[in-house]
Each structure stands twice: as structure tokens, then as C-alpha cells.
Amino acid sequence: MSKFRAVILGCEGQELSISEKAFFRESNPLGFILFARNISDPKQVKKLTDSLRETVGREAPILIDQEGGRVQRMTAPNWHQFPSLMSYGNLYKKDPLMGIMALEIGTKLISVDLKNVGIDFNCSPCLDIPKMGSHAIIGDRAFSQDFKIVSVLAKVACQTFLSSGVIPIVKHIPGHGRADCDSHLELPSIESHIDDLKDSDLIPFSEVSNMHVAAMTAHVLFPDIDPINPVTLSPTIIEGVIRQEIGFSGLLFSDDISMKALSGDLGELARDCLNAGCDVILHCNGNMLEMEKVVCGTSYLSERGMNELKLLDQYRNRHLSLNNYNSLFSKLMDLLN
Image (cartoon, rainbow, N blue to C red; front, side):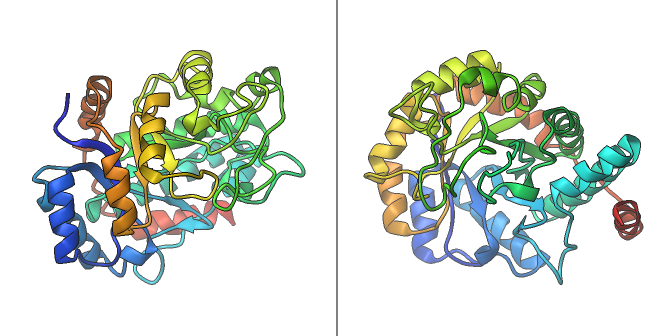
């Protein structure tokens, strides 16, 4: 068993308070996640990631959502604005080789941005497949509505992240694309039969399941599979669908348990997520009172989780240096325009 708790925590601002340092030192979370509220410029972010790691005395994982498009925490003027994932999918439909080339460039550039400031896990790519009539929360965050295109580009993005020293956290397993509402605000229910999911939504996740990637659950209810529990709290879905049907054996993160799709005491939610089969809890808002409850319900990272984390370390230690960063970004924009 590890000596650190199976939880990723957020922090409130752009530098750690005395109380945050003391709390993180005492609670010893597996790692941390950054949001726009934590970010101003590269020097400040690097100082923050160094400070976070100093509080726990190790090279703790630090996560971010840097998808490009609508979801990008590190933004202009200090970083480039990257295209949405669907931009790559649209180019791939016109010219597969150009689509792949553009995605490789964009992924490398994002990786360099992250590694330069001490971030080594990216909650991307989004492998959801939006359907006609579904909620726009996924939309152009997905590569395509065609699972074949999503599958091809998923492998390209994941391999490029890994070779660049960033661990991709694919999401939202086993699929959020059919949801009729935003899980940040309420719990979606997807009425599709499991056979429909096997023929489409599950395939991109299966295609990357043999790669050293992590995954993030969907806060979604699938009544045909488990009529009571959303994915994050469902042993039936985590074991039967994610682990067995999809074949994903890697490190499994919950989505943020402070989202309104889930309800109840945060400590109990954390415990229930781990009991359902998640390896690591995600709590993102940096609220100290909430984090205290989450930590109380969180056990240490399991031996299985530790072994998966060790497999990822071989990639986390890689560094990619690009002398032609700006010219590559210009090339990326030329390919997509």
C-alpha cells in the first residue's frame, strides 16, 4: 500500500496559502489539478507546481484540462489558443494524412507548454461521440461523431502525449456523448442499450486500452446497465463495462466529485467511488472544508493503483524540446485553415 491518499485535489489561487501547505502536507494526496483560477503566466505556474510538490516531498502528478478549443486553462496572451479536437476530425475527413499531421503537431505543442511549467498529466483527449440531439457540453470537444475517426485520432493523440512526457487521461469513459444534459449541473441519463454502446461509444476507449493511458469516468447513468448508480459509483459498470468489455486496466480517475451530477456527503462519495472500482478520486474546486471531508473518506492508493502509476512513470520522465515551436504553431494553423 502507498503512503499517499488516492485523491487529486485543487487549490484556491495562484500561490499556496499557509493553511493549504499545512493541509496538503498532512493529508498527502496523490497529486493536484490546476484550473484557470490558478494560472497567470509560465513563471507563476512553474512556481506553483514546484510549491505543490514541495508540500508532499515528491514528484506528485499534476493535472490540467488543456484540450484546446473551449476547454483550455492556459490561455492567451501567455500561451497559444489551440484548436478544438473536432477541428482535427474535420480535417481528417478531408485529408487523413493532414489531419494526423496537424494533431501530432498540436499535441506536441501542448505537451511542451505543460512540461515547461511542471504539469505531467492532461485530462485529454475527449473520446466521447456526440449524437444528434445530445447536449452541447461535449460538441466540438470530441474528434467526430464517427467512432472510426475518433478511434484513429485517439491513438495518435495518446501516443504523441506519451512520447512527449505527458500522461493522457482519456474521458469520459465509457462515453458521455449521448447525454441530454450537462453533468456539471445535473445527472444525465443515457437510455441506450449496451449493444448500441458496444457498436460505437465503447470502441475508441477499447482502441487505446492497451496503451499506457489513464481514464476518467463519466458522471452518467446508464439505466440499461445499472438503473441506480452513475458510472463513477457503479461496480457493475466499472468492472463489467470499463474493465472487462472495454478492456481498460489502467489508472481510473473519477470525474470531479464536486459536480452536481453527484449528491450526498463528499466523504461518503469518495469512499463509494473507491469501493466501486475507481483508483483515484478527483476533487477540483479547492474549497478547504470540502477537501477535508473528501480526504476523510479517501483511503491510500491501492497496490493495483501503485503498480499502474509506476508504469506511467517511464513516460512522465520524458522531456520534449522543440526549437521551432512558433514555426510549428504557424504550420498547424496553416493546415487547419
